[in-house]
Length: 129
Image 1 (cartoon, rainbow, N blue to C red):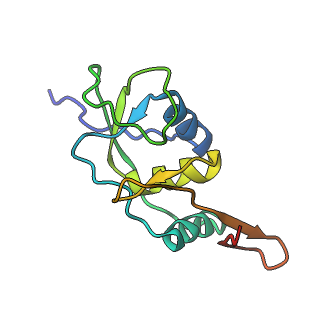
Image 2 (cartoon, rainbow, N blue to C red):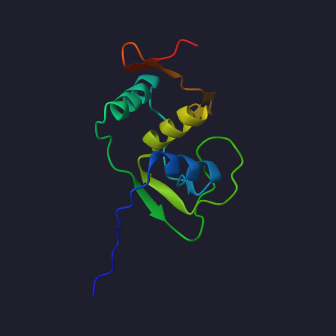
């Protein structure tokens, strides 16, 4: 009898962002820092807006919090119950832009990623603000 190791869960963006905000989704200690350039974040949102696939996320569910690293710098309400194995750059980008919180770059400096939507051109661009 084989035990299911992986399961497909259809989280929507709102659920993922809320779980990160609460602290239910965290980062393992082995995860690299946020390295995406702002143009890559813009491209992610543009692809999502256009309905293109943006890849799978791989989360590891565990009952014992193995990491205290979180996305964003806010205080979290609960310890992580899931850690991001694959998709940290995408989830960090989504969370940071949706909640207007800074990302922490490789040099440990906080920086806001700003993108803008142009309804006339129906595209997403880097914000100049």
